[in-house]
Amino acid sequence: DYDLLKIPFALQLQMTPDQYFNLALQSNNKQVTLNANGYFSTFTGEVLAAVETQPIRFDKDTLQPSKITGLIDESLTNVTGTVTCRGQFHWKNDRSVDGPMNILLDKVSFNYGNVQVNNLSTMMEITSFVPFGTKRNQEAFVESIITTLPFSNIDINYYFDMSKRQFNISRMNMELADVIFRIDPTWLTYQSPVQTFLFKAKNIDLEQVVPYARLDNFNMQGNISSASFSLQLDNEKVLLKNMELTIPQDGTITYTPESYSNASLDIFKNLSFKK
Image 1 (tube, rainbow, N blue to C red):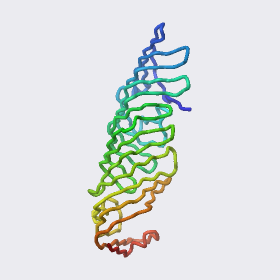
Image 2: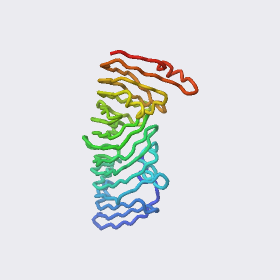
Image 3: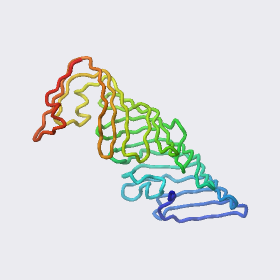
Image 4: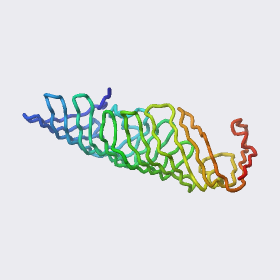
């Protein structure tokens, strides 16, 4: 079950004898305004309406999506940016809620677990609200995603299918130290403690990667012509797994701790590799 609305709203409702209505909702703080025109069936209990909102501007201190509706996971925090909605809302007698509804996200930033997303923009076409789902081949652009590595200029082809509790990624490209990383098609399972991404990249200059990856006390020299590895988000941990590298020339990785030794990194104190 979902609480569709969780904050107080002022409501104005006009209905005609033939069950058509005009509805205006405005939150008490006037940050959310919604207008709907449609039809209500007393026989089936269904509602079909055209819906439009004024731009909703999220703020870390005063307005968060999970405080407006139970459809949004509370793990989505520190949300900023603007969202505008326009489309159709169809509440069926089986309690499912369909669209289609177009949602414009303009430079939306947020935290989800240990992942920080900055300036996400997309026009998302929702086909169903309960269960949540979108049309396939949705396009999005993100200025940066920061986990262990700070990726930038991310473009994504995606869709949601919450009947299977999945966020599907059909294509995802991103940059790090002028290297383009590509993620194989994958899906993320809603509320799963473990999520895995398979990365691929070419022509990596290790010396350039160090400052971007914030690898303190590391010195790297050499090149990698191709690489593939899995990045696994496991609760609060970020794990690098199943790495395969193609190396065209010899190189070195040196780790010099300043004041204490990290046993997990000691293998890098004087490591060389050959093609």
